[in-house]
Amino acid sequence: MTAALALTLNALGLYAIALVLTVAFAAQLILHELPCPLCLLQRIQFALLAVGPVLNVRFGPRPSHYALSLFVAAAGAAFAMRQVLLHIMPGDPGYGSALLGYHYYTWAFIGFAVAIVALAAMLSFDGQFAGDKPPVTASAFARTAVWLVIALSALNVVATLLECGFAACPDDPAGYELLRVVVL
Amino acid sequence: MEFTLLFLAVTIVLLAAWYGTRTLALALFAATLVACIATYLHHASAVLNLSF
Image 1 (cartoon, chains in turn green, blue):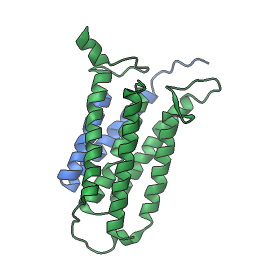
Image 2 (tube, helix red, strand yellow):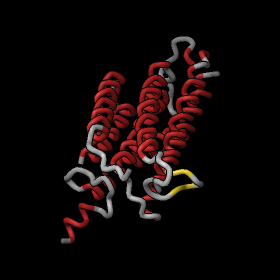
Image 3 (cartoon, chains in turn green, cyan):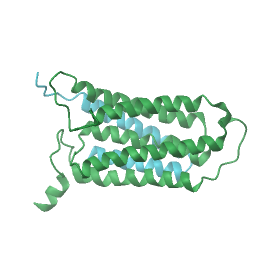
Image 4 (cartoon, helix red, strand yellow):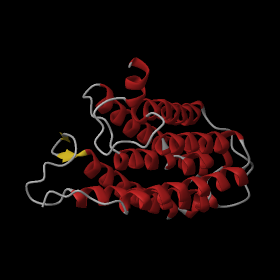
């Protein structure tokens, strides 16, 4: 695999992360599914997963950049599995509604597992790391992907501030705490 | 509030990865990941009000 192909695949990975963050946003805004603390932590891991691909796009592909994303994917999978296990008892309705038969945290676990496999697959192609290459110039396709993820992460700062306000986030959020404080 | 700060930290890490030096981005990344795990452990050690 050439470095150019690896960078294209990294950009596609960034678009995939942007898609996950967008779907989570859509569920929050359209279906009024407010994320719980563990759900927010999983969302944060998806955003943090983007650091490896962004570094690859900026400085060229390196194994250490993929390793960063592997650490995050492992942590995210652990957080998601914790929430799956909290609702594992028969009869437990789970947190929030289901999407295509699975709750969001189950999809999150699947997403992190897929990320781990994809990262391992990328690491197995040595050709992208061969030779001393000068810093690459990112394509418009890759730059757009980077800015999309940064924008979605910044939007989540605002959304989480609105949901939690300046106090600890409630375990079962029913509304936007900051708006409630401002309105009352 | 802690999750707002974590999202803010992630946004800063992404900006550092895109504009800053590699060393700065790696240091900020490590600090943010440790903060995420610490937040998780804090929540995981809280008392659970289970219904069974």
